[in-house]
Image (cartoon, rainbow, N blue to C red; front, side, top):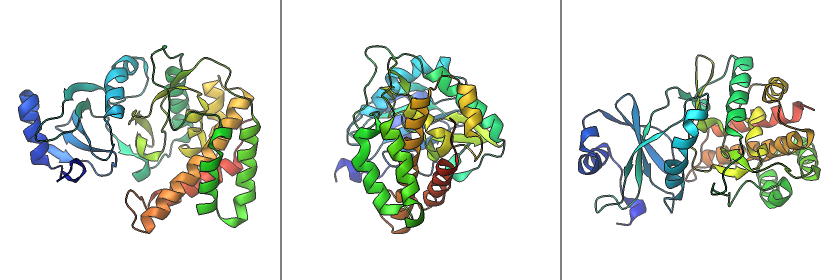
Length: 300
């Protein structure tokens, strides 16, 4: 049996805790639905265990262990904070981390009804996060570049899922982002993967941000795309007014990236409909709704 074939069960999680952190082995353990690269298990009411599953290296977990304790105290929304480290062993030859649990429902299974409040909350969160990163902050390897450097990915997504009736409009948004000038400020902290499964909601608004494995230092436009990917229609202008630090070129890049991210959600939905590994059928409608917001919205 290879590592990727190891079945992660509640009994395995409890055994690992008993071996490495026996004081945490008592509370109830419950599987959290979803997750591909990592699998989550609730540990009592306050904690969760993040188990490396399909991720080929522990880099993403190690990144969270290093930087989330630094960032979390400065952020106005709850984020998962590592509290214990699980090391590879004979029972489970991969990394795992005990983290604080962020209560709420993932947005891909919930909704936002208080749009103005959510826009203000997300803008405030990103203002706090988007500060100059230290010299030893991680650099992105597969994201974070100017949209012009992501043309192949955009084109693949467009050809795969964009309805013919709107393909030209989507391409126009992308071309405008490609024409925008580069980020000219210092590299700032960027979450890097803000999509509906990585934010949680409660009482109709955002209540937390999760999964910082892709965080990097770079262009904030990659996070600002969330104005269209996450928020209800008509709230993007309020979001950018509250954020207050995005110039015209950054908003143009963000909108193009939002188009690409929306197409990606639609592709994941299509993969789910076809029964392909990692596919998420319910992401298709979310992606199409986000793409509609991109085409309707402009904050300039």
